[in-house]
Image 1 (tube, helix red, strand yellow):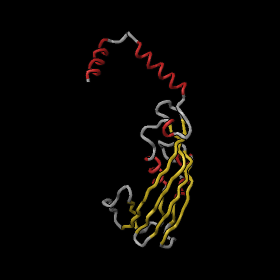
Image 2 (cartoon, one colour):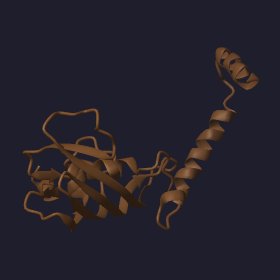
Image 3 (cartoon, rainbow, N blue to C red):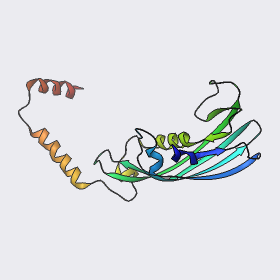
Length: 178
C-alpha cells in the first residue's frame, strides 16, 4: 500500500483557489489492485483542484498508454488512453449516500486528505475498450498473422469434420432456421 500513498493530497493546508498536481502511473500502481483488468501502463495524470469553502472540484486528465490483450490473436499490445473527468468533492458530517454519484464524492468534515488512487484506478479501468483488437486500438501494430492462420485452419477443420453426432445436426438445423 506504500505505493499508493503518493496519490494522496493533504488539502487542509491549501488556500481557496486552483492548485495543480501531477502524478505518474506505472505497472507498480496496477500491482496494488488484486484481479486488475489492466496489468501495465505508462500514464500521466494532470489534476487541477479548485478548493472552495464548502467543496472542491477536481478536473482530471489522464493520458498515456495501457497494455491490452487482443481478443482476436491474444497478442499483448499498447493502446492509447485519454481520459477527461470532473470530480466534485463535498464535505458533510453525516454519511449521506443520497448525494453520492459517479461525479460526486462525499468526505467527512474532519478528514484532511484526499485519496485519489481508487478514483484513478476506476477511471482507467472504465476506459478499457469492451472489445480489444490490435489493429483498432493498438499503436502501429497488427494482429499476429501466425495466430490468425492457426485459428482459420482450426475453423476449417471443424467445418470439414463429418463424424458428427446426429443430435448436433438437428440442433444446427434449428439454428439455421432462425
